Length: 340
Image (tube, rainbow, N blue to C red; front, side):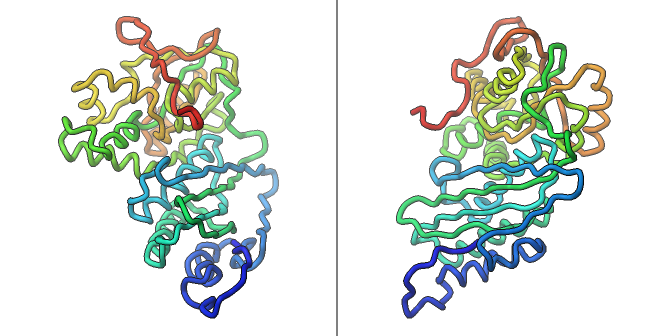
């Protein structure tokens, strides 16, 4: 995680110096990954095991776009890492290492950085991944970070978006819509819900749970998979386009948490938010019908709820039907950058 060289002042050896910050806060996160060389070189060496492929994914997070910026620093760090781990999960990969590029505004000093590093350390221990390098720079404006996560998978076993076939069952993990509702709750827009329900939803927005164990178990079982980041309809649409098929989803079968059920009961129009809000970081995937029993066993073994919510047909796009067979697909296909 080499810092950019620049002219040093007489205070360059103090705690605020970028090289000292790397040594103090980030080198400990790399100490169990030999190829990182304690972050003393400009690059790392990464060698996957024999018969393995390297899976690479990158996500950038910007204050005011992906998080508010006033959250605890450790929560910001953990979310930044977890959204990348979710991409690894969607391909069935095992986490290996990650790199971090961090642009810090002037007001993010040592206490903030110490808490940020502590959040990364906590999730490294939980998910078995290590820092391999990156970059640390100053910015006069917005806190921004980018993580590139690396994982491994057995040759030919990666889950893709382009494998869905007509007749497949469409399934999801966990519950859908909590994060989008949590974002609304965070801004005071769910005042009709009890405070405990709002806190539960906000927790899902602030700290997603990557489904790594489930993703690995789906290798060789699922025909296609994706993690739900842009919204359920939008991300199923990615599979539909890549696989040249149509997805038909039953609204009544989409799994909702108790707070989400209450939110929709109070205002039915919130259904569109659940279908298109995004940042669930659950897995959406398709399986052949003869794997339904195997999927139930997998769900029990990894301790993750999975639900069949629809089917794959010939055609194109994604259609959501209510219990009466009416098309309730939201007009908005999900979140997209650069569109207003």
